[in-house]
Length: 187
Image 1 (cartoon, helix red, strand yellow):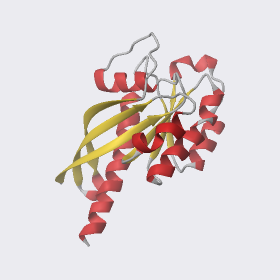
Image 2 (cartoon, helix red, strand yellow; image 1 turned 135 degrees about the vertical axis):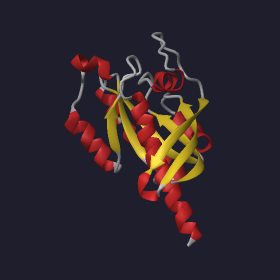
Image 3 (cartoon, one colour; image 1 turned 90 degrees about the vertical axis):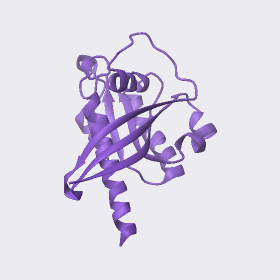
Image 4 (cartoon, helix red, strand yellow; image 1 turned 180 degrees about the vertical axis):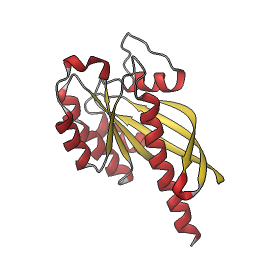
């Protein structure tokens, strides 16, 4: 198995208060902050992932740059070019307790695709710890995911459930894509 060092920018997108910042905080620091903090503009965080890519016989070290994008309406049009440029993947975040945040993912994903084209998307249904307050179900999630040829998972920034897995899964798809691109250039 050969080793590769890859670099990738991924953007977290979704409406205000879906838990984007909390997911990153849980993933990078394994911490959770109960009080809400609005992200202004974008916050950039870095983390290194080890990603095995068995069908390419590669063990990849991915330097992941995670962009936490503010969820304010109107942001997409104003600054989308600058923030989405160079993105290799998207973690699209919806709040399980607010149906509108799932519906609004289409606008966020389309906004990224207008800048960088089709990139891997993983939909994170956050706040899974609040299942008893769910405002939508599996069928609605599946419909949104299928529209973008995306996979989805449930996460809880509060408990940590599914958070590492979400970033690892997105990282694996991004790594696979990058390695296929490298292989295609060598031929």
